[in-house]
Amino acid sequence: MGNCLGQPSNTDPILFTDEENIQNVVMGQSQPLLQEKFVWKSETPLTAGQLQGKRDTFWETSPLYDGRREIWDALKAAIEAAEEEDYDLAQAILTGANISLPNGSLTHAYDELGNHYSIPPYCLSRPTNFVSNSITTDSTTTDVRMNEIISKGGNPINVKIRLSNQSKDIKLTISSTDTVIIVKKRLEEEYNVKSDKITMLFSGKILTDSTILGQLDIPKGFIIQAIVR
Image 1 (cartoon, rainbow, N blue to C red):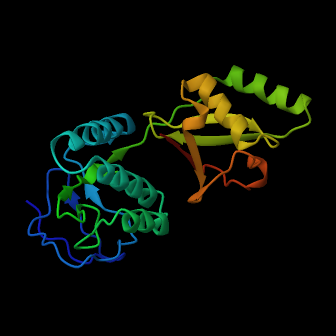
Image 2: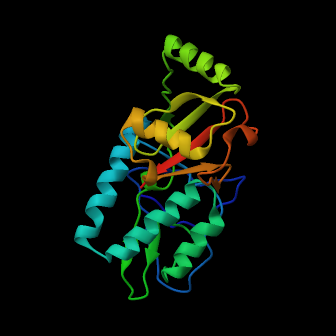
Image 3: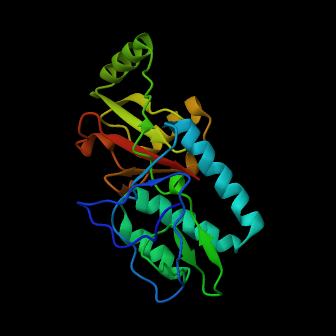
């Protein structure tokens, strides 16, 4: 079993396994959210699909047994923001919902009524032994798409998108003139997700539908996050 979580530092992270739980958590004055990634190792390596499956099961079932639904929803939103390293947003969500963190970690939280909420490591971050398995698009389809873009006066850009409900990263060839809403519509057509349920983030910032992706100067290999609500 794990030990009580102290104040981990960036240079000396505390490593937990997926079976460990943090004991001796005492409700008291809330601490600010720790602004660093939660580091842990799964007993067996996990793919994106397996990790997402564990998360979906937890968030769907936990509110049925204990705590308040609105607090579970707030914790989920705060965790998603923290995983994108938007700690200010995560803290704002926690504060707005009157959620206390005795140790500054999202592993254990309390609501204003004193209800305790325990969050497993796999909901907080990817394990250190995460198995990355990106997919590639068919070369013929890519060539056709590139020719279409050029014929319309645009420049082809290859982007990698990580849909939160998919087990693998998605590679798309888009035009330098494409806006976020155009890319969302493509995701809706090709991956069966509602465009109005997608929130896209770049470098921790939410992209508006009118944002032109070609103006973002996206680094090669950079992954654009797409959270499906």
